[in-house]
Image 1 (cartoon, rainbow, N blue to C red):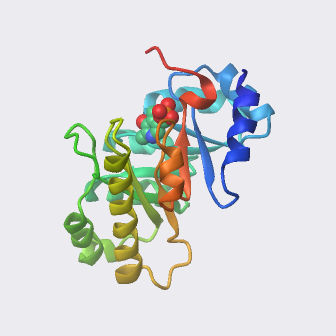
Image 2 (image 1 turned 180 degrees about the vertical axis):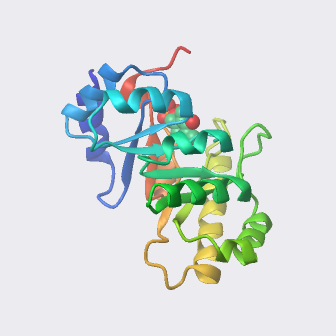
Length: 222
Ligand SMILES: *Cc1c(COP(=O)(O)O)cnc(C)c1O
């Protein structure tokens, strides 16, 4: 199977309201172009260096989602073009994105990343940290960011019930934030959860964005 066939097969499986982010990390621009030429426009990268290198070599109308841990000193390089930063895991980062969005005369869409897995290696806020951010005076000064929802990664395990419960937890967090802070904001509607191994469960649990790499581009060896 080639990239185009993998994409078409996947798109047929996904409900119409679910956005597919094709995660192209470690893959060459040729592979991304193959997906692009098959009509796909939304791609995900998890390393700023890699994204900065690939972006100028590819069509301008690609919508890039940044999905990895982002160092504050890298924000300025992706702020001019990034479509969404899904991995906001600390307030300092949010402020830095706001600053560079403003410098570029843009508003940048972001998701708050939550730590829902058992692995300590995964990044993300907990609910009280998110409440602290959203209740703070500093947050009121932020004008160039739209927080569009939440993102999370489930534990890497074969136990479906663990994964399902973590996705349910993320949905609960989304509903809490929606009710408390974003009830009037129609753009606060995204729950980004589900990767190659667990996207079917994620969709059953209410995902609106799935981030899928290996099912489209094949396994990664680096
Ligand atoms: C790599 C990555 C994915 C996609 O992983 P696959 O298992 O290849 O689908 C999704 N989300 C994040 C944050 C990632 O780093």
